[in-house]
Image (cartoon, rainbow, N blue to C red; front, side, top):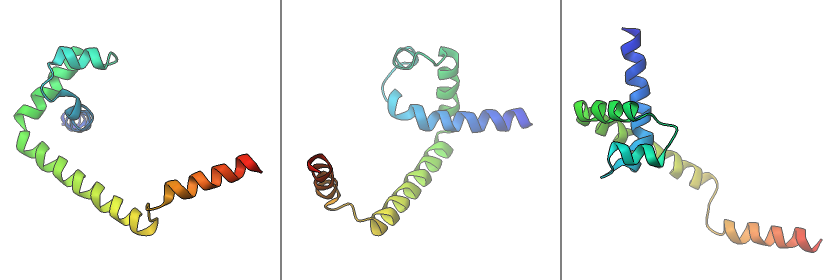
Length: 97
């Protein structure tokens, strides 16, 4: 039972990491792009995703919504508008001084 939970947890994290990379790519192409991965593991992740597509998609949607909430909270606290100009001015001041 614990092994299955561990496999599901690992697979869900791998899916988050691999999904953007394998849209339309073969398992072999993914392994070429990420040589530290094993082909069998990539096939396992693809298989996990295909068997639980609706669950994974729902999980990914929740993660994306949470990321957007965190981003909005951070932007309200630290307004990103003008930050580049502020940082460049600070850098120029340090270079001159």
